[in-house]
Length: 119
Image (spheres, rainbow, N blue to C red):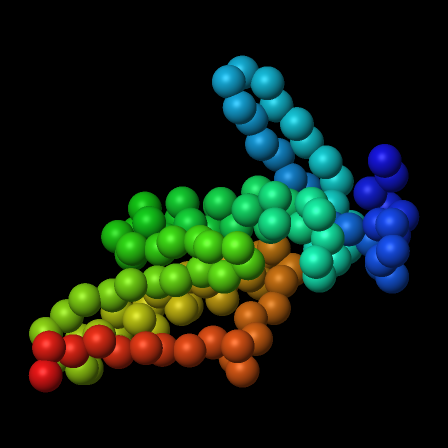
């Protein structure tokens, strides 16, 4: 499979960057040159390979970050609203910095903050 060519039924290349993964001593590297096709069979796997680094970075910094399908969730806790805003902004700054480095964009209109309170 040539990752530089459009995926079957797709209009553009399948990826964009370099993806490296390993499992039980075996490793695989691929040069990535375009975005993942929406609904593509391999798109969830390819996205997970890319976003795994983001999850590792944010979790290493103390944020509770989880990935599901093509979304990520960052959970922050605090007693005061201003504290939560500061923590969340710090986490978002890390995500934006990672995205810029990876050549990706964050869609603000697809970004949501959902507060849960005990009140």
